[in-house]
Length: 66
Image (cartoon, rainbow, N blue to C red):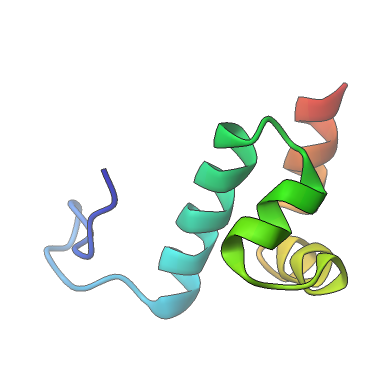
């Protein structure tokens, strides 16, 4: 389940942190199908790829697809 509070600090997570968790969860849930992930998240595929790169998840995604 998604939590708004970081366990280690007890503080609220940042928007970037939450966004990363949501994208990571969606990638796993939709088994890396980028079109489905972007559609379900309500963003374009190019935006999804940009966010993956910004969040440092682009390398992780490539490893999961292999």
